Amino acid sequence: MEATTMSDETTRSDETTRSDETREPWTVAGNLAAEVYETHTGVVMLLGDKAYKAKKPIATDFLDFTTVEQRESVCEREVALNSRLAPHSYLGVAHFVGPSGRPAEPVVVMRRYGDHHRLSSLVKAGEPVNEQLTAIADALARFHRDAVRSDTIAQQAGPAAVTARWEQNLRELEHHGVIASDKISEIRQLVTAFIAGREALFAQRVADGRVVDGHGDLLADDIFCPPGELAILDCMEFDDALRFVDGIDDAAFLAMDLEFLGRADLVTHFLDAYRRAAGETAPESLVDFYIAYRAGVRAKVDCVRVAQGHPAAGVDAQRHIDIALDHLRAGAVRLLLIGGGPGTGKTTVARALAEQIRAQVISTDDVRRELQQSGVIEGEPGSLNAGLYAPQNVAAVYDEVLRRASVLLHGGVSVVLDGTWRDTAQRERARRIAADAAAPFSEFTCSVPTDQASARVASRPASTSDATPEIAVALAEEGQGWSGGHRLDTSRPVADSVTEALEICCLQF
Image 1: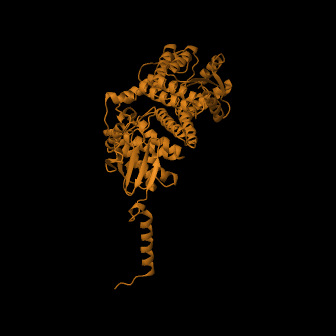
Image 2: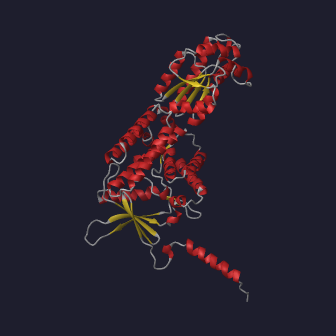
Image 3: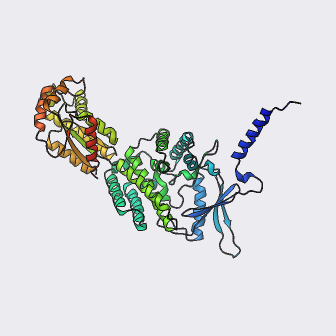
């Protein structure tokens, strides 16, 4: 017979304790661990290893469950649709039958998961969830890859349908009176501007096959991560149109919810993982737009909860609206024009500003060099209004710069234009391009003493600029007559000029 040591007994005791701690309470004989939860549209009853979901007989602006037939239909749809992502979680539709002979009440029967495996619980507890979020991103990307696509589905992610969904949410928010009217007005203005100038972006998303029959309601509360498993539950089942979404819109819902839970770091991890898995190239502005949309949807749900007698939900509504505003402001597509002569620091300021507002810089120096190398323009550098800088060459460069800017703006990418921009007519063309793309426009001219600009040009390393100290002096003299732009003193530290420019351009809405 083997001897049993004290350490052996301690190890077994520890293992038993850990097993007891991880065992679900309803696995203990005689304990059903009964719980009841109410949502804004239904009631969930947890009994033993099953969950039973009943729909409330209510009607709102976005659903109608008033008849038992409607509730039966939506329960059947819930099981069928959710089986796409969680085939082992949805067991079917059963019925509660009363003694009075009234119609049986349909209920969705599901496998029960422990609350400690809920993604939202893990996040709130500060548990490491990067691995789980990567798995969710991978599963969502696979789901979107294989999802149904059609013209009907694609229409729901077009400008008209997206505008209608936003407007319906905003009207409902106005109706409840929980959110300040000035916040709703700003949201409406930002949304209108984004959609108005981004028809090409929405069309490209459809052409790229990014609009699918998706999940439509991806919240951390409805995702469970037991060891070695993943269950993504509760997709949008009562309105098909609300489930026909851009894939990045689906992902943005969970991103928004993670931010609401206070974990912006997890937002970045999840979205990066989804982008990799889905081969996603959506501009950041579109991600911001859809995060804002999902925050607005949740704010509306919070307001419904307030109307149902839960005043504390008003705090959540305010937080969701603040998230929406933050992302709409960050995602506003802008055009900034940074002008000035050689040596004024305009390129340094342009690049620093672009980094702050997630914009792409289009430099006349870079475009000039590209056009020269491709043979579109030719000539020797070094002289103003001649050779490489002859009027026809300058016109060709600015035509290409503005063409590229227009494409980027309509595609959802903010742009910073870097050049001398000494021609008033060219600056006016830039302004019109911004207006056509419903993009706020800010114009800046960088200014330093002429001798300082000339010295900078003489001492700087090789670059795409062909300007000489003599050109710097000549352009500095021309620049004295620039009107209509904000003058930046770029003899001071770059950070000061960037801060001033940001304060000005962010007041454009």
